[in-house]
Image 1 (tube, rainbow, N blue to C red):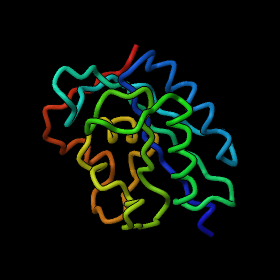
Image 2 (cartoon, rainbow, N blue to C red):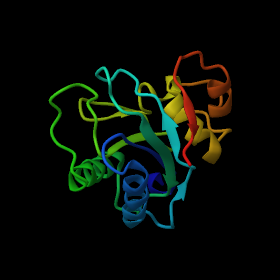
Image 3 (cartoon, one colour):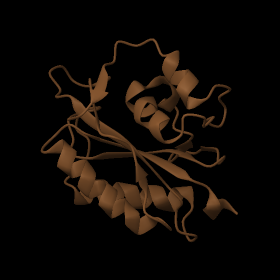
Image 4 (cartoon, one colour):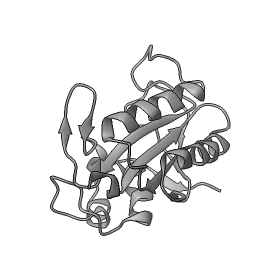
Length: 167
């Protein structure tokens, strides 16, 4: 059954008290899960594809088994509502600073390619700020469509992104 799949959600913030915003968001994500979510450490990372002068991000990844009534699309709707509850405004500028960004990275072996949702997340395998915290929770996970594990993807990543554990 689809509901037994584990969902991985990437969290990011670069506006406001990012670390505490992420901790609060993780607590709210528990409402969508059959058991308390597992959360990576918080990572501070350089902005990617953001306007010049954008502040660093704080990032994390959360893993949980969604409640049985959820499908990827309905969970995505809830994640977007949560972003708005945390003060996310409609985008004026691509990748502008934001208090909370939630991305559904992967949901078990589900694959989607619709205007609303692409699963797995189309750029997750290229992004240190996703792979670094994801590798803490699931180093041996192979994202649908990939041949390498998360740990292997991370080890092979050649970007100028910086990620360090947030203190």
